[in-house]
Image (spheres, rainbow, N blue to C red):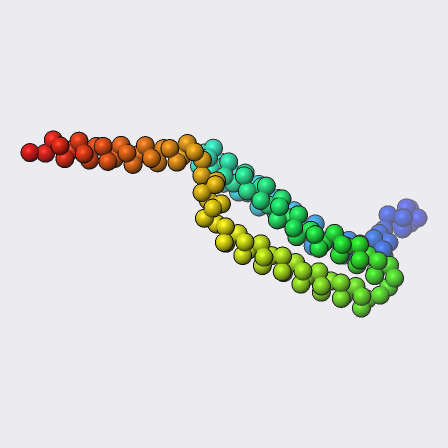
Amino acid sequence: MSALASRLRPSPRTRQVLGLAWPAIVSYILNNTYRINDQFWIQGLGQNAQAAVGSTFFLQILHFALVFLGVGGTLALVSRAVGARDGETRDSIGRHALLFGLVVVLVLTGSVLALLGPIRAFSDSPERRLGRRAAISSRSTSSWARCRSCP
């Protein structure tokens, strides 16, 4: 039994890999949990609200793609430094990756804030825009009709 138990224990290398991977795993799980939670609480608001939240999925994919520009290379470089037992290089790569991630997040935040108006206008459905125009014209027509019937 002890031979089986010793084979099932993770090796030190496996512990190192899991130690490096746990932030990415937790981030992915929390992000998907957040999306599922959004869809659950929005279900009572109707199809338009669900479609609006669902359409942000593609923006989220774009965000992950831009952030993972730095992560993809960082994982390989950190793995190489860990394999060579070079802690100084590993730490330097980690610091540069965090700095790169911060720059990407700041650029994405600035671009989204700058494009917030056009994004909202683009995401507004034509039916909704037509519905607003119809509501505005019906209000002005009914006001006009009331004014004409006044003595």
